[in-house]
Amino acid sequence: MTDEQFKSFIKSKKSILIAIAAVVVTVVVLIGMIVGSTITPDEMSVEIQEELNGKVTVFYDSATDTYQLDVNDVQMYNDIQNLLVYNTETEKWNDLTEEINQISSSLEDRTDKASSIMLMNPDYPELYLLLARDGNIAYDVTLDGY
Image 1: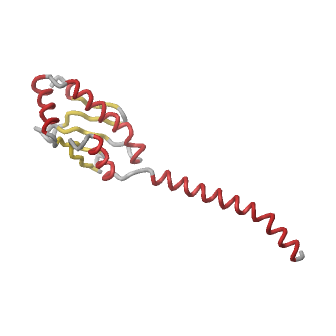
Image 2 (image 1 turned 180 degrees about the vertical axis):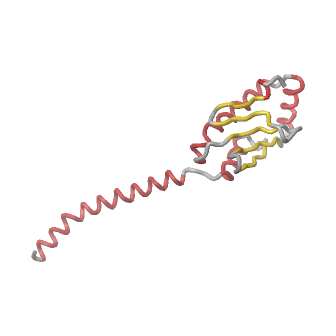
Image 3 (image 1 turned 30 degrees about the vertical axis):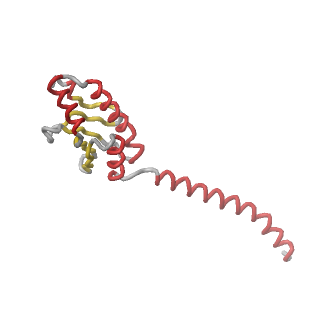
């Protein structure tokens, strides 16, 4: 093979090598986007707190894959009390239930884990009022004859 033939051979293969390199880079970027698109439980806790306008403090329990929501807003506390004691504020409860349910439906996509969300009873913090998982309400105190 002469120098001229070798240069011609390299030029013809160069465009193929460039195309292969472009495909490899694209695949690496896509994998990085997929892997990098998930967030940690701590980051998710912050997002849940922000989505609920800071009215709850969020704790993540890794042993049970559960986000615990503790009410820290006076108005939300009063609304829950009115719901439990006087059976009022049901529209606000339904809105809150729907919002928590929507958040629960996106958890696995956002964190790569199927996790639950529990809204805790502000007066009895060991009890929960609402449990949502995968976009389904597993427990709602208003349906339990509170």
